[in-house]
Image 1 (cartoon, one colour):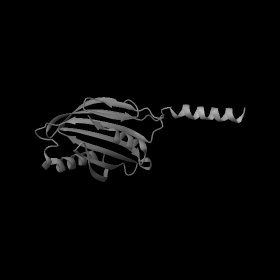
Image 2 (cartoon, rainbow, N blue to C red):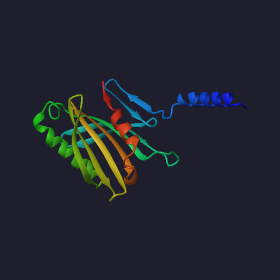
Image 3 (tube, rainbow, N blue to C red):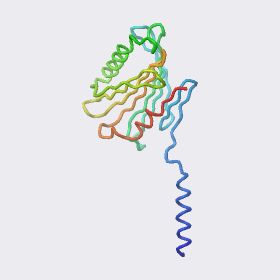
Image 4 (tube, rainbow, N blue to C red):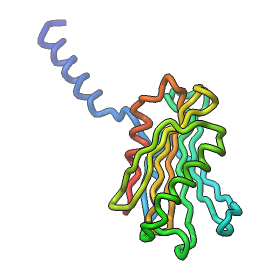
Length: 179
């Protein structure tokens, strides 16, 4: 094989492989939002009794099988609608208390420790990003929560502590968009 043919084959191979998709993520989309998951999530609906009455949690989660290579164990997206007379992003006077209680509840539910918290927003709506230590250093739960009018959108990943800084966490969390 001459040099010209070899170079042509190498260029063709490079060209063909450059069009190959390296990651096909699943787009979960409704009339209100869209978010990417590594694979199609499992959807469930759960009614929960709370101090303000019954709430319906619309959960979408993807638990990574042990046979698949992924730096994370779980990807979770939750949508919960609250009575707008009680909880709303328009009620600025209750926002700090609302997020404080929500985060405390999340930390308590997993018997974890709050590592960090910061204020975030999406399209002008308030939110929080937190990191929670799970099982004394075994894993990190990274969570973003947004209050959009009277709907809470929550995204979470669970990752081994040593793999916390990985691109899939960011891709999942940053993929959430309101319509």
